[in-house]
Length: 403
Image 1 (cartoon, rainbow, N blue to C red):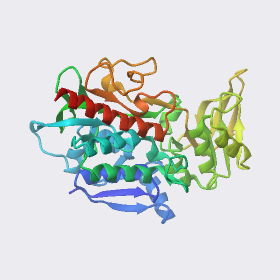
Image 2 (cartoon, rainbow, N blue to C red; image 1 turned 90 degrees about the vertical axis):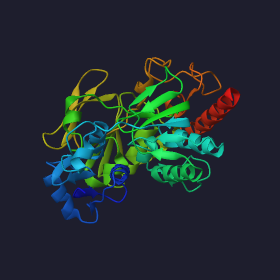
Image 3 (cartoon, rainbow, N blue to C red; image 1 turned 30 degrees about the horizontal axis):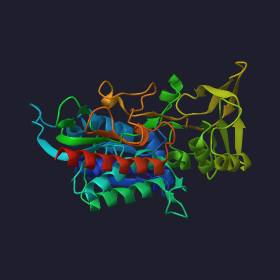
Image 4 (cartoon, one colour; image 1 turned 180 degrees about the vertical axis):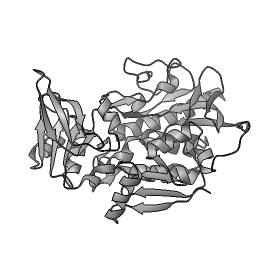
């Protein structure tokens, strides 16, 4: 078993994902909470060559990086060899094939709800929950608009409850990505390097992923002050000035959360008004720690080894100015995760899967889509869960008709 050291903090969804992945691999680790022991944070930064965000993972003394780096190693099939100290040479073992009535690809509120309904219908579904299981709610602090929780609930806690409910009714979960979905044959095939499952019906709930600015400095300073998860990394920049990029509900939520730690939060928005819901706008606009840079775009994130500021460009006249900051949180929207089925299912111009109106059915009989992979309009946890139940019911009825 490998010697693993994991630097983390108590409330960190990406830390939880890293632990889940390592648990799936049969590993144990030494965990160091950088909030409980601030001096260990300095140790982490030094060992991680300047990275300031958690988790930071070391395997047998080698710095792997954060959760994204760990997951990428797993996707490439390189993690097992690293955990085994180099592994053994030779041909890869043959991937076994098993069959399921229903395979669900992706988790989140849509996937977990589909799993609950499909399990209760005794369809014995199997789910590729993904390395980044739980979807966008895993990096959402407070969920106040999900029915049944009058005091609110954190995104990770809500996803954990849904996961437990799905497992209680018999869903078999695999915390790994599906890397290939073949909808040209029947039974359909869903697989990765270690698992191959044929399915009578497939439910896609692959959700959406955060968009990035796409500038070189953003990539260079990733995990060195640039992040897409305020709830993960905000506390690491206590008593610092911070920047949030975006104008929707997510950006306002991030900004409000960061006021717990920041001396000042500057919201950078390319328009002169926000896209966020009125209640979120009112909260952000009224907060004494939040300032707004209207009609502005991020031209460059400043700093060599860590973020020290942001250069903004006026969207109207092209003038630039610089503001100091030690953390930049990007919240500019999401892109549907539908590359797996590109060329097999009909997609719109953005990449959302097209479905028959009033249903979750695609143009391929037996293939259903739910959640943010097919919803460009609402994109809420509650609507995703609703389409998850629809997909399971549609699948159950389709399978019954075939019988």
